[in-house]
Amino acid sequence: MRSPAFFVFNKDHLMKKKWLLSGLIVFFLIFSALNTTFVSAQTQTEAPLFTFVQVSDLHIINGKSTKKIEKAIENINLLDPLPKFIVATGDLINGESPKESIELYKELFSALKCPIYSVLGNHDPRPYFRKIPADYNYSFDVLPYHFVVLDDVSSGSNGVKFPEYTIEWLEKHMGSVNKKTPIILFAHASIFRKGAYPDTMTSDVHNYGPILEILKPFNVIAWFAGHGHANSQAEKDGVVYYATGSLSDNRANSNCQSGYRIVKVFKDRVETIFVSVK
Image: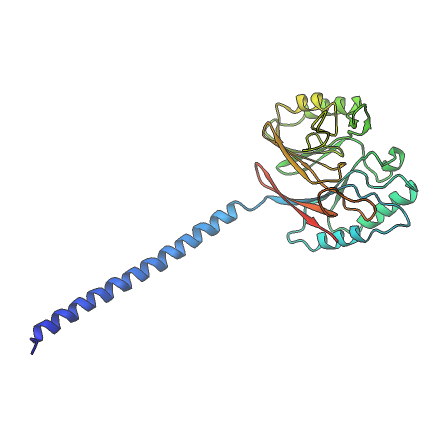
């Protein structure tokens, strides 16, 4: 028969194990709570400052279907948080029935719950584009960002080009912009686009040199364009160049469905997602 002392020893031993296990559980719970708080704080720190949406190459024709555009507007109005604005990067209409088509463009996007900024495209007759109303070159702010819209659709020997008045306007305008201010630019044709003209150039715009020279001292974060009816992302000298496919019932894309791009804006970068619309 075993001695009582043996059983007393075992009881003490088991109690120590029990207390040790309880301590470990309490430690794990406290660590998990602290870690969750840290992750939550980190997530809050990484939350975007705001969002915006890019649509492009709508090619609206009065009397023809606009169902995809209407569906996109409906979806955008349901986004939470609501975008600060939408930018339509050119080819708003298709050149046919321009007066009626530009009025249809205005009517469709009047349903938005946020402002829209328009960019001139090569299919947009200039006299009717000015009835939106919109200037060919202009800027606006959503602090701390500065946004610049540029006209780059004058006829050129390869694709399109920046007209002289755009280059002059940008040089004058940037004289009033703080060099530390984060900047995002919009144009119709892309500055750099993968597979744009693989045998001759990497861009839809063949005279972008003077523009980039003016912008060199500034804190440019990204460019957004359309024109090529394809999604593309390229990076050069720390700047990201996005080309976005069309949102149109009348024109197709080469590497994606019709859709729009949601852009999350952070203090030093952007993140985007392309949303298809069927």
